[in-house]
Image 1 (cartoon, rainbow, N blue to C red):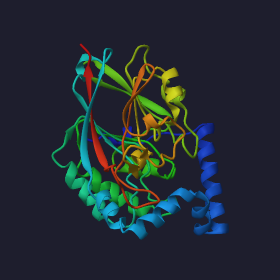
Image 2: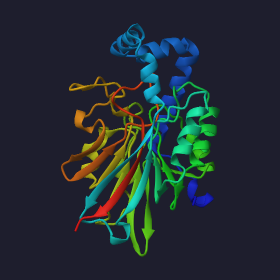
Image 3: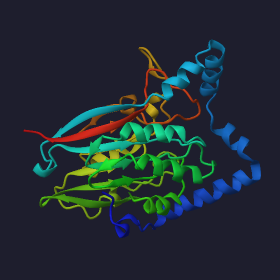
Image 4: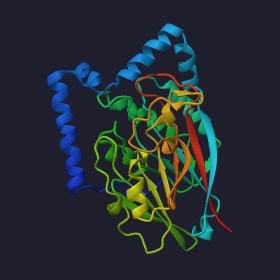
Length: 314
């Protein structure tokens, strides 16, 4: 079931939104002046360049690309003593970091994988574009394809990532996605409710407002926070968040036995890089995502769609 059309249109504004728009304007101006190649080279770490060269020379590139085309469905469960009884067993389908390119095959593959997967709520945690300067039209077509395979009783909620444009807020709303930009809402079932909040990208744009996203939540409410990356865990704990759901890291994408991920591209403890984690009173989950970035390969880190089940602790 999709949210009603009027509920899908997110009204955004304020100084942090103006900051995002200003950054987007500067990016566009710099891109027009210097060209795409200069921008991309300035953002690629030398380690990634070395890894690319190693994969080609060692003939591991094809294997890594094949790994990236084999997404899995990962099921995890979290228990909370304050979870309302009506939400015991609530299932969240977590999709993130699609990094859609010009090909539609991956979107079709994800759609087919999700068919038959039942959930109560679908959440999207950003990075829909392969590259910030890629054509936007491919994102809408590919996301629409994926969403056609989603079965979520209470609809789909999304936030923006560091590769995404402000334009996505309205366009995704037209697809039936309720976009949250430093905002939140109350989801009620059988007279009980939880607060679902989402913040703008904290990694590159740095336009997140965790406190603002919690504005309106009732005292003592169970709070679920959607963020693109795990980098605002401290602010989330201060806002009394109970479950923090994010992506961005790709789980490292390239993981070496014993050593783990070569890079996470996030300013956070490595234990927040993938899977379930805990920080003080808050629990969190970082998905490995469904796409790839910079290096179109994966090793020891499969792409995933996560089913997160909420349980009430006895």
